[in-house]
View 1 (tube, rainbow, N blue to C red):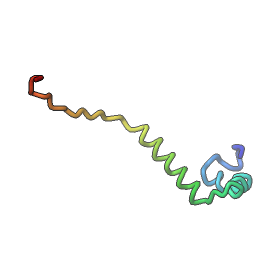
View 2 (tube, one colour; view 1 turned 180 degrees about the vertical axis):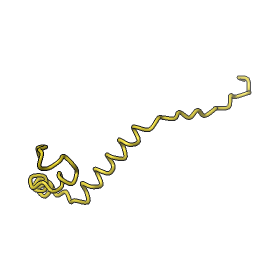
View 3 (cartoon, one colour; view 1 turned 180 degrees about the horizontal axis):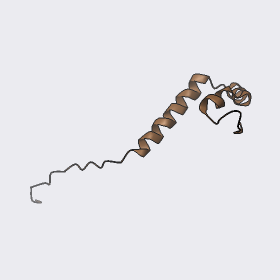
View 4 (cartoon, helix red, strand yellow; view 1 turned 135 degrees about the horizontal axis):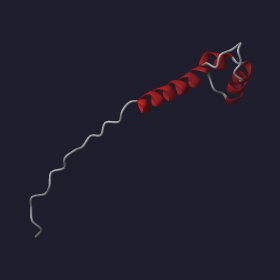
Length: 67
């Protein structure tokens, strides 16, 4: 699918593109399968945009002396 002035480059346009639908059909990919992958990609990108919080877990030091 090529972006043009008639059809903006959106997921809806991608899913309505005949070539995309033919490839999905040939590969046995359902619309629900593709939507699931696109939603997972969206969530991964959104998670990447959030600041990473480091959590430090204090490990208790062993108080015994070697035997």
